[in-house]
Amino acid sequence: MGRILFVCTGNLCRSPMAAGLLRQQLAEAGLSGLHQVDSVGMWAVEGRPASENAVAVMAERGIDISDHRARTITAYDVHEADLILVMSREHKRILEQTWPQYEWKVYLLSEMVHKKKDIRDPYGSPIEEYRRCADTLEEYIRRGFHRILNLA
Image 1 (cartoon, one colour):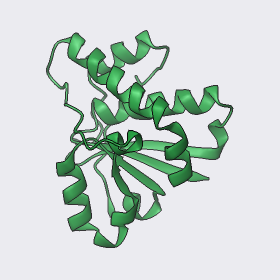
Image 2: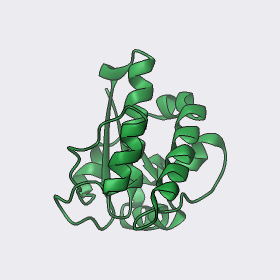
Image 3: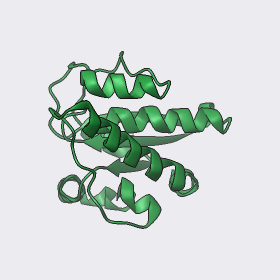
Image 4: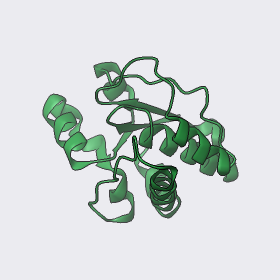
């Protein structure tokens, strides 16, 4: 079973939304049991729920992330993950500096579609920003789905 880990800043918006979207994509492909999908934050406040707007935008897409609770990334997470997908170049740089022995498994999510773009953090923004963020996440996950599976 491949373990795919999404990482954002606080584990409140982007990474839980991305995890929900990938779980949905795996279910649609009949592959739910073959991969474990999780999310963490670089500097999360442990136990905080996902942002209300993130929960609402995912609900619009038929995805329930209301039970999500924030966690900070640990050495164990990095070691155990087969693929780590981050939202920004800063996240990637810090993870590669902190755990250089695992840099081979750390990618920007946008790299799954052959880009090197940060995904803007919608935290504290109007719900439209969350929708735009979710659209970007969904595009990268759908278009990069086979690459994600191959790397995991």
